[in-house]
Image 1 (cartoon, helix red, strand yellow):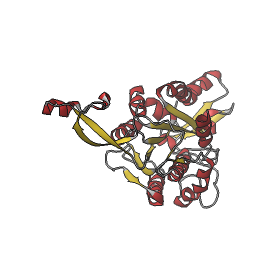
Image 2 (cartoon, rainbow, N blue to C red; image 1 turned 45 degrees about the vertical axis):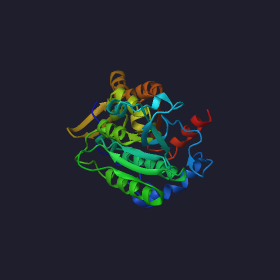
Image 3 (cartoon, helix red, strand yellow; image 1 turned 90 degrees about the vertical axis):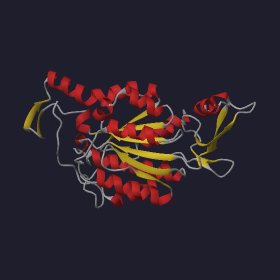
Length: 310
């Protein structure tokens, strides 16, 4: 199935045209973060998701010392024990702030839309809602995409950290980057960078997410809370029963979507990845949501709330 590369999107609200995200519209989405479940304060005025699915200890390594009776054997520092000849154990300190990392897929298929806005713009807007929600929860915010040339936007707290991430989303989703190295590269980098207890919000096209090996998702979700938001367009999910002309990189094509064989191929190419990801990833501890271009950009928070209440 050939993927359309460009179409005209309906105009969005305000200065946004639905084709390229505007920093002002991402900043304005701060009000939507209040709709999600707020974090509760702990005993030392530290904040964290009361019902989050944290992996591992949620702790940072502090030092190693000699083992004493009563220490947890799971924390033995085997390398230092082998070098010194005496049993040593690792000690940890509580992380003062969790990191929420926005992982941006910048595949060409995202720069397309038929209703309200491009999928790329909806990805930026969903990422903005996630960033403002992280600020409300007291997290530091970081962002990265699949590239071998640019470094990640490093974690930072407060409004400053969110604005840096939003600026990156505005640039990344303004037009397809020439140096896109793929979603798998971004996820592998995230797995190396994130400490246990962190949170990764992945903004992706379904085809990109399906191409990622299952082992990559499993490795990331083993110690990190992973939320995958799949960006889709209404045309992809429910095509009309008609002959549809499409402009592609190889020229204009005409698809007879009234023909059963064509609709079957369309379903396999467009809906197949979405259905497969919903079927496979929750068992690997990855939360999956689908967000259409004509939905409210915070609609995925409803699923988060329902999952936490459940």
